[in-house]
Each structure stands twice: as C-alpha cells, then as structure tokens.
Length: 187
Image 1 (cartoon, rainbow, N blue to C red):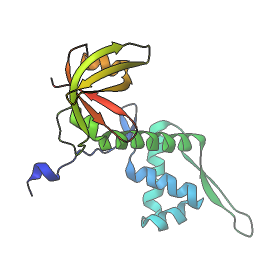
Image 2 (image 1 turned 60 degrees about the vertical axis):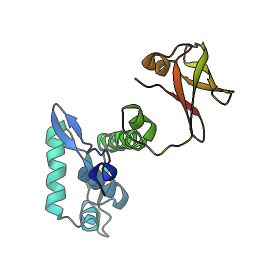
Image 3 (image 1 turned 60 degrees about the horizontal axis):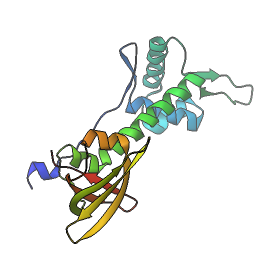
C-alpha cells in the first residue's frame, strides 16, 4: 500500500515552564496513576517503573516549577501513608489532558485536513452556487443553489465565511455531516 494512503498526522504533547519541558505523556501517566493509587510506590509498580525513577521525575518537575506536584504523608502504626497531587499537580494533569484532547480532535477532524488539502473519506458533497449571504455576529446563513436544482441552507461561523471569502455567485461544495452542513471552496 502506498505510504500516502497509510500516513496520518500525529503529535506529541508536552507542557513547558520557562522553556523547559515539564510534563509529557509519560509524566501524565505517572501523575494520573499516583492520583488513582494514592501512592508513589503503588503507581510505580502499576506502571512497571522503579520507585527511584518516578521519585526523580517528580523531583525534576518540582525543581522546574519551584513547588511540588505531589505531596506525601506518613502513616501511623497501622500504615496509612501515601501520596496525592498538589493543586499544581492536579492543574498540570488537567491542562495536559485538555491540550491532548484538543489536539486529538483537530487531528481526527477529517474536514479540517481536507480544507488544508489532504484527502478525507466524506462523500456527502453537493456542489452549487451561493445565492445569499446573511451575516451575523457569530454565525452567517448561506443559501447554496445546487445543480439538481435544490437549495441547501448552511449555518457556518462568520469567521469561516471571512476565511473562505464567501460571496454571492461563488462556486462552492456543501459537505454534509450527520449534524451539520459545512461549506468548502476551491482556492
């Protein structure tokens, strides 16, 4: 199979502080597992990492940001010690997951990749001519007359209208998704 048919965009995410990487995929897994297990040693075992490696990773993060991302506490006579994320550790983990989810959505958005010139699998496309553009502050209503003859109405963001420079009598293509009608224009 040709490489162009099997390639796809991917990205590695990490958070930086003052230009230094502090949290990537592995670090997020460490923080997440400490949060679940409430113990550095249990998290290390679950992840198949040495306690020393996890401890040094946490120390490196602490040194980079100037405060701990995990706090530990000793147990009494019956045990009970453990660890938990500090508010900073919790924030960093949430921020990492937020960015990871956003980038994942962008990478999985086939219409976006089509818009920048990459092939997608969507086949629900109808070509037509723009008959009216009713601008709003946030969304703009565009009426497209298709060749069948039928008119399709799409609500798209005003920002997208500006980016595509859509105006009456432009030749466009309506890309129909399950929940919306999008507008595409050849450059």
